[in-house]
Image (cartoon, rainbow, N blue to C red):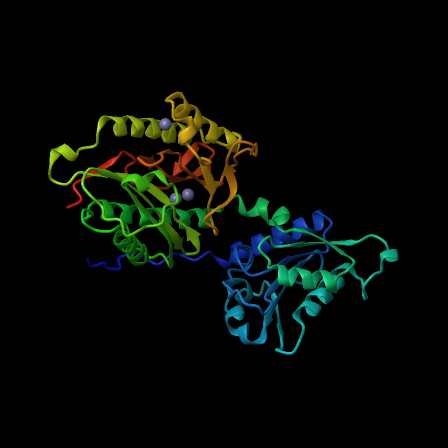
Length: 402
Ligand code: ZN
Ligand code: ZN
Ligand code: ZN
């Protein structure tokens, strides 16, 4: 197998977007009466600054105060990449480099207090606690130190501030999600058109990862190849099992493209040359139910519809066919800078869909020990309804695999 690089490189998020995001975050910090939002390494930091920092035991932290400049606190040895990030390049954040012998948390504490106008730690008697939000994925080791340095602060989750911003994608983000989806579509087509019989799941999975990279992904995060009875396990790890004629394969693949996720599932049936290995009736009937459930759930996407309604549409169709107990996961998850993020399409999530939300629609039916099937697309909610980013055909891919 030869994989040739063909993809155009991702178009990066323009600096103007970081300006908008930082100013929206700061407005929310002030509106919510917070002293500051503290953002550690990860998707929140990339969202606000474009800085893909290394996750280290050394603290990197963006301090977004209610008042005063936004400051990126970085270890001295990371100053060069920090300076090169889009937000720093556009002069949207000030850089504060800490030396190897400094305590960076003390710097952060000082910036937070500067924002509240307090010069020294306030005792219990000094009045109201200040409120600080920290990014949800901040390591406990940093948060516990922050709690020591800011005993007067009450800490809450940063998603209370950033969740409502990140959940709605702007045009540049949607363009990256679309390019990621199209790249993944091409990988599915290449795998479905190639040899499968006689190869192990792990071999095919390796080919998926190579192809995702060749299609311009900077990372291939997952490549589920679940053949035969393994197709009944939604998150099956690709194994040494060798693919045979006369069985299904659930292919669920994805990674990141310009920082944004791809995630597609298609189900294949491998026939080989002998017509005796065509898909049998029971499987085709199960797949037809799934196909209808995925189509109807996608069709139900529009602004104002509660997220849980999309799940219910898929589930009602699958349950009516007698497979309710075999649809063992939620219908979908948001996608963006993280592979799984808000909104989750699941019973109990009454949050109304909004224009610009991006998520998977991925019902599945799994008969343990026998076989399963799943169809997954990434869908953007628009004013006119669903914008389905993936374009690969959704029918069962009946392929010779030879
Ligand atoms: Zn998936
Ligand atoms: Zn998914
Ligand atoms: Zn069933």
